[in-house]
Structure formats: structure tokens, C-alpha cells
Length: 328
Ligand code: NAX
Image (cartoon, rainbow, N blue to C red):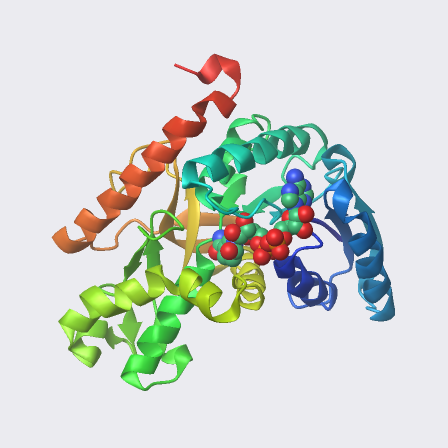
């Protein structure tokens, strides 16, 4: 049985995600125990959510726990999906968001370290997800660093979809789409190494101008575009991307997918101790390997460096949230 905790359980992403996972969309026929973590203010909403889960009669769902204490909800979990975070309020700077949400991930990292299974795998979705993941990782020294990841799969899915649309080809013919760097507007959707029907994207789409400008900007700004149209941020597509990420990680395959992971010992010269999105393949059971022979030309390198710089800046703003002995 897989024991899975979802934080931010009463939020909009979780409202799609919980029902997909309970239905078996992620772990197939394996039985599931769900732990749902929220803040106390959401107590009423949590009651309503639990009623709906009950009313679905999911055959694979053997146990559901809900609560407000990370130490209770993270106890003995195999997988932690950290979605819960505060949204950016009016007039709030990115820096304020970093500091506010950083504290949540400090507390949750410590709690995971204390009570989760020692081989727990942790996917951080709550924004700014790369740096939140770094904070949680630093506060959980007993959990291997490679068990922490942040989500850039939604960005990958967005990029894949745009390329398929432009080439008027079915989605499954587009592969090897990598997102490099931060899950932010500095992210680098890599079309150079992507393939359409096993040919290079440039060979099929030919319009370099469109690829270097329109395509990259559409993917980078897709999140805010959706907020502008829907009045709310992407939720169903984010839930789908969470399922896609974990499905990839738990199915051993040489297929490339994007994942933000600890940058230690990477072969692309990215500074160590960042949570940075790389092309990865899956070793199964939540383990991955960074693919290290992807060609990075000057165009990509320049953009990747900008995203790396942003992550270094974010890290410098939250360093005080790392355990004391690490502050330099
Ligand atoms: P919502 O505001 O609908 O839900 C967030 C939920 O988290 C709320 O119910 C809130 O009470 C809860 N929460 C806050 N602090 C908590 C804590 N300390 N412990 C447990 N629960 C807590 O946001 P939603 O649309 O679900 O988005 C959640 C997060 O995902 C946001 O930070 C959002 O920016 C981020 N996203 C990340 C994406 C990615 O690709 N990495 C894409 C989608 C999304 O934008």
C-alpha cells in the first residue's frame, strides 16, 4: 500500500489531484492511504472534502486521514506532494512570497525528516517551488537529497503542446522537450533538443524566429495568461502534471522528462546546491538520473545562466531558513 500525503488539500489543485490519485490514475491497482494536510482555517472545507471523497466509493482507497499538524500527517508516508502554500497577495513582492512560504517548507522539511519513511519521495509544487524544495531539503538531513524534487512538468507539457500545435501533428509525436532552470518566467523551454516525429524541431517547424521568441514566451507566460483569462491559476493541468511527474518517476524508462532536482555534481556546470530543472530519465521507484549528454549551444547557455542567477538570488534571500550551522 502507498501512503501519500497531499498538503494544501482544500485548494484548487488538490481538488483535482486527490480524486485522480484515489481513482488509481497514479499507482494503478496498488492500494492507497491518503493523508490530507491543511491549515486550521480550512476545517469546514475539509469536512466537505472528506464527504465527497467518501461519496466516490473508491475501491483502492483504504484509509483517509485529515489534519492540521505536519508531524501527524507526514507520519510514515511514502510520497509527499507539497502543494499547500500561500498565494501572492495584492502588492506582495516575489521576495515577500519567498519568505512567507519559505517558513512553511522549513517546518515541513523538519517534520518529514522526523516522521516520514526514510526513503520518502517529496514533490514540491507550491511556489516558488524550486526554492521551497531547497529549503525543505536542507531541513531534512536524514532524507537523501535525491528524494526531493520540484515540478516543471506542467511547463514541459505546455511546451510539448505548443510544438505539436505549430507542427500540426499529434502530441505523442513530440518528444525530448526539456525545461531548464527555475519554474518561473526565466525557465528555458528547450526546443533545440526536442524531436518531432524523430526529426529535430528546427527541421520540421523551420521558423527559428517563432521558436526563439513566440514559443519560448508563450510557455514562460502561460501561467499568468491562464490567470488573466480564468481569473484563477491553472489547477486541473497542474494536477495532471503532478500525476505525470510521479508516474514517470515510478516507471523505469529511458524516456526524457523534466524535473527540478538537486544540482550537485551535474555535468552542465550549474552551481551546486540548487533545485534546478534538468532533462532526466527514470530509474523507477521514484529515482531518476539526470541525462548528461544534451547539447547546450550558446543561445540556450545564455538563457540557462539567467535562470541559474535567479535561483542563486532566491537562495540568498532564504539562507537564514537553512539550519544554523550552514549559514556562512
Ligand atoms: P490554492 O490557494 O487554491 O490552495 C492552496 C491551499 O494550501 C489552501 O487551501 C491553503 O489553505 C493551503 N495551505 C496554505 N498553507 C498551508 C500549510 N502551511 N500547510 C498546509 N496547507 C496549506 O492554490 P492552488 O491553486 O491549489 O496552488 C497551490 C500552489 O501551487 C501555489 O503555490 C501555486 O503557485 C502553485 N503552482 C505550482 C505549479 C508548478 O508547476 N510548480 C503550477 C500550478 C500552481 O501555480
